[in-house]
Length: 287
Image 1 (cartoon, rainbow, N blue to C red):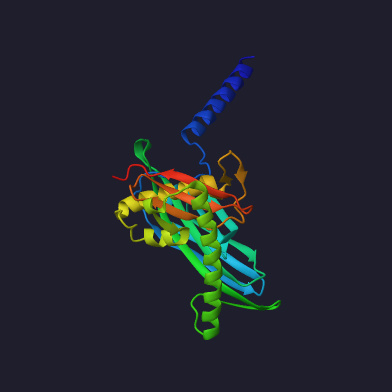
Image 2 (tube, rainbow, N blue to C red):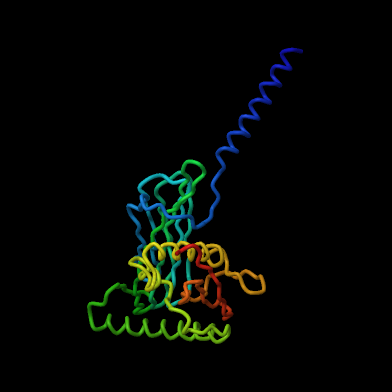
């Protein structure tokens, strides 16, 4: 009988130890949450690339490596074709430094392709302090379908034919996006004079050196808060004003409207069904 009580006691101690261990070492959850940026932590590599594999197939790659292991590493990416979202990439790892992702995407028409990526790390330090590190990368590619079995691609045009194809695809994309954004501006009664407007790809380019009117530190905060909002309210599904959630595939390239008074930004897009959507992201603690 004493032996049975002894074994029961050992079992209870073991279960208690396991519960204590897991409470002290909670498992990370997939999320992007902006925390103060640690300037001592950097990404060694960040890369997004697009490659035409054959006449109807595209290889989309995204990878990044932090200079150390992080409590949570996560990368997310969007792929737009002629201004419309056709694909997403997302992956996360715990206690890792690197993430590598790739995806094959069908391409059956001439297109201007834009891939936009956000690389993120959440770092836990002593006394419960949490910091983050972030980086941006992108790529773009023009695909010209000559017939149903032949296509070629380029980034920068080198011939008269390529210049013509680039101009046609740029104009086609710009025309569709401007129509969509203007519809949203009118629908929500947005006063454009109160904002600086950037398509998401241009916003990221400007952010690398600092947004106009903001310091680099302020810019990094705005970028982190924006991508937290994009992940939760766009990548995982577009949240409409009536509480519905729409699949983002087929939606337009988001237009970022940055308030001149530095209080907030708006993300303007349109669902595949033509519904204008805007998301408000407050800008916090940048002064």
